[in-house]
Length: 328
Image 1 (tube, rainbow, N blue to C red):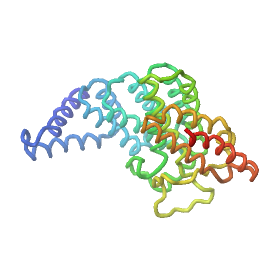
Image 2: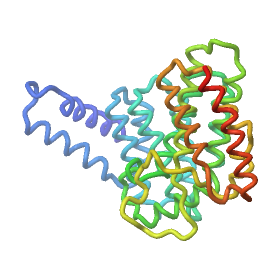
Image 3: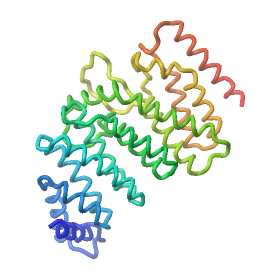
Image 4: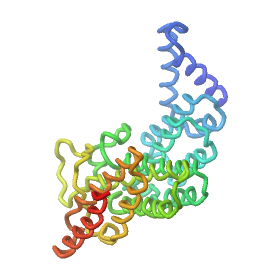
């Protein structure tokens, strides 16, 4: 049965992707109907796994990942916690074992993993992000640049899913549910993402110049992740819904709570971004990410500072690192 369904989807995909002069509008509509009906299949997980493991059509792989994402949300109440974790594990393993996947297929699968984690954030059946962070750590430690980039993509998908409504998936989450998940992610996992990025960037910064092309690619992704974290609009303790909630604002000041004090008031963090900027300043993309991180660190305010003295010390150190950069 799974083989037959796969063949039907592959045939339908060929028609959907064909040039207008090759297929008729009626044929295209019929093919789209086949795909849409498949996405409504009840408990499609074994079929989707079969498709992912056997189909050679990228568009069909994309549709299989989309079907899993939509079905998990739709059928959450029917699934056991062990089934959900097994599905998440399968998808991550599939990504690492198929490194030649088209980027849009890989990103869709990673988004599916992020949606599964998000749906379980405030549910007793949901798994924590601990296993994901362990997977990310293992991928980076592998030394394989492709695996390291996959790890970065995992973290980016996670940040996108929890951050703003403009980046999150359209899978029917209510505003209130998203708000609760966002707050929970901020309290437990957001700082872990940033600390992970800092750890790997420190290792890359210590490598001799010039960096290899592979190391440069990984560093660029980590700078982008750091920028995403430092541009995060933290949920206030008393939160009220307002127009524009969760929309990305590139100029939002960095205002985390006191739990970030040990990380953001560590002078080595500011030093790291200035050191990296010195190395990447002639790469416009990386320099832009790095300058944005420095700008956000300069905007740091709120309860992260225990008193005015610590705020003055932080500002003095930041200026001390910034002025030599102007002299270059």
